[in-house]
Length: 285
Ligand SMILES: NC(=O)c1ccc[n+]([C@@H]2O[C@H](COP(=O)([O-])OP(=O)(O)OC[C@H]3O[C@@H](n4cnc5c(N)ncnc54)[C@H](O)[C@@H]3O)[C@@H](O)[C@H]2O)c1
Image 1 (cartoon, rainbow, N blue to C red):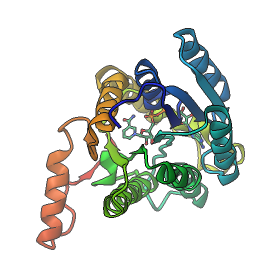
Image 2 (cartoon, rainbow, N blue to C red):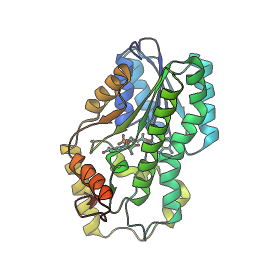
Image 3 (spheres, helix red, strand yellow):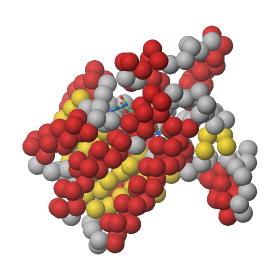
């Protein structure tokens, strides 16, 4: 889509982090915005800030793991704006811990938001994009969709699945001769609120988690979050890459080169039928 002015951008997880930066970037390009998020006070604040810059914005409370919420979101977008054009399926959460420690609730939460959130978004919006033969879908995956990090099993599973959904949709749109573009966003570390995702855990789940972390673990985690806030890529840089991928119809969006050697090493190991080495299995930061 070369000209975004006056068109509609739909962004899940639009209240914070990457989604909020996409909203600012697409708003600056003259788009109307529809933001879905589960964190309502933060969503309201983001909507108010965008409106104060003269951007037309809808902020809809929506849990992307719930198909009815996403269908209602899509109906509201169509009734208020008439169409959707750029669809950023971006809402996501991360949860640490080894696979042996991961509870079923953790798997369901992470896959519910990161994977089913994407499936529900496609189910609700894609048929109209295809019918109007104009639009672009951006799916937020991760470098974790191309390699495997220890202690991030459910997250990596959701991101590997996202990568293949994006590749499949790209192939299907190409084979159909459709003008609906597809991009797969694979960020490295970006300075957002992803590292405090547990703030969005469903109520009942908190009590079912294992013991709270020790003081030492908690302070190590705090130091890691501080390090990432200071050193990771800023989300507005990623938003520029996403904007350009939409207007230039680019499929892959990698934000930096940090993880490319590990991804390349993984591909080589697969070709040579070698088991995953320490080079490709990361410790969680
Ligand atoms: N920050 C990074 O380093 C990084 C790296 C790779 C991929 N990503 C991906 O980027 C995407 C955006 O995350 P972020 O880094 O901006 O984190 P963030 O926590 O700042 O933003 C995520 C947003 O999703 C919302 N959200 C959470 N659960 C939801 C639900 N059930 N329904 C609707 N909204 C929900 C949150 O409220 C929040 O506004 C995620 O898919 C994440 O996996 C982030």
